[in-house]
Length: 614
Image 1 (cartoon, one colour):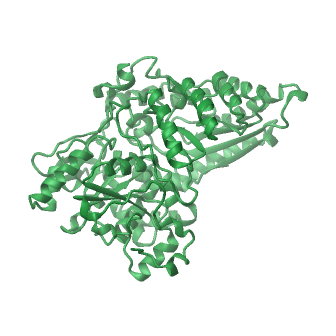
Image 2: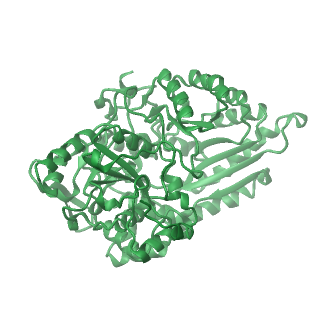
Image 3: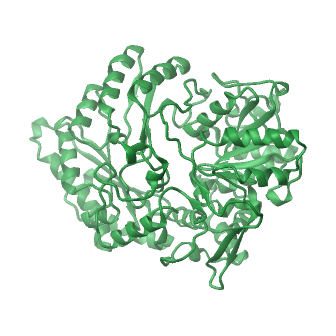
């Protein structure tokens, strides 16, 4: 069955987004399974097909003989318009079956600016937007991914959330669904029982209450037997866990059009702004022999000509040298290129890149211009490290460097902002110390600036956030200081949208009342907010006002030590006392050692694996 006629496909920008039948996609007969699961990435096909987590869950669920898992993505605005005009239901790629006919609609939630796309997917599927309005015929809508570490702004739209790593509790949840279905139990009864499965949160049965000042007073289950705290699920045996050795290969070029090999999960570094570094603790590595086999299998099963290592901090993988040397030797024979992630630029990294003749621009992420600010954020990187790494690269023939920074960090001053172009200039000076006849042309340095967004389960979750105007003022300070630098002509400067960052901050730390705002802007036509051409800050600003909420309450307000947060009912493995201690250390400009240098007592040792027990 083809859901879209050839006439419709000819009217949309990229028809291959919607036709399915890609290499390694899995299609099962509906009559051969007990459970059907529509797996959704709420963004355009090319973005969703680049997401490793989606490939993992898709393959893992399809390993079960009693489950058929199919994929669905957000229709681009051209098809969205046609589907609404013709009253066409959203469908999966594998069988072109309407999503509403599935038992589950699973949505991976990677980015707050995709929240209106979640409503787009639910709405186009002909499912009631709010969980409380759904009936026995509607799929169970379940969400997972990093954004569920604060579920509350989108809680009314979901029946369930999965907190943590998907490889752990899905079997138990699906077995429970079969049991309840065979017993003829109601949707409500299943959702209550599901809320007792480790890592599963059933938001319909929890109630927030607020103080007069708008802060959260309490958050409790309304049904006896449901847990007060939902504990994050973590893979401890990282070598035996499922990993897709034959991922689906898209027909059109995806954002990450290559084999993605996850070498470790978690991070040892403890940067205080980084949510991923906290919520994916503890750091766990995959055995190098397992990775070698996976690399060969994935190349053979996909036909990709490039492989990339996936990790939060690839340089910290203990067997990195052995792995990369294997790839340079064995994979090169297959005509495969190794794509380097962001490495800590040292002698080893430079040597590796020379071996693969990798002469594209080097990437550094100092995050802050001044040493004081790098200590505030616990970056663990000195100016000497940066200049030393750049110098080694320049001496080896590189002449292009890209530098990533953040503006608007807690405790930041105007002087800290001015240090960003000064550091870039110092790097250029280091290049021109090379004798002219030994240089590789002129040096090119790019400064790329993003604006800081405080996230839950980080030491900066208490911090105030800058307004959009304040972000722009900061960026102008950098621009003015750049004009004063000797090597300004060798340095280019770019910054992200400030209004987007400000709204992201409101959604990241919002409570359940923010769901009204998200629904309001969606009904006004807001989708693909992550794409600049479709984003309307004014629409969001007016929606907060019409819903009786002040965006500044969620963004520019600094929180007190004892405030109850909307996400405090989740146990993410890092304790609130540890995060507060790190918030205080930031104020003292005190550096905390990484996990291999010494344990800081964050709480992740509870899980019994990874770096905590090496």
